Image 1 (tube, rainbow, N blue to C red):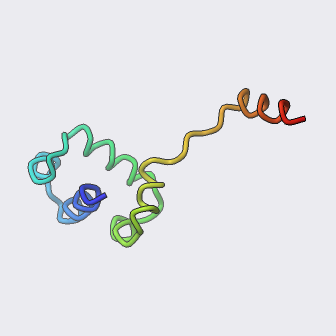
Image 2: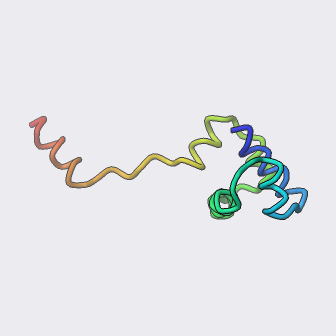
Image 3: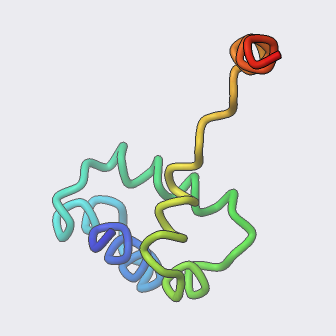
Amino acid sequence: MQKLRKLLKLTLEALSDRKISQLTGMSRNTIDKYKEVFAKHPLSYQQLLKLSDKELYSIVYPPAEQDPVMMNYIVCSQI
């Protein structure tokens, strides 16, 4: 989470992806991926920085949607 927090801070400082890559060791593609995730979220970068590691993790790595077929199997097998 430290790298993600550093990415958020450096983005707020208006540094380029190339410079952020040099400072964090992340690839520019990875930086773009995280920026895309953060841009889709309703919280600002400042608000994201205030979140706990657990909350930030849940934004970056949301739980996978349940497979409806598998869920149907689980429900039926319990009957």
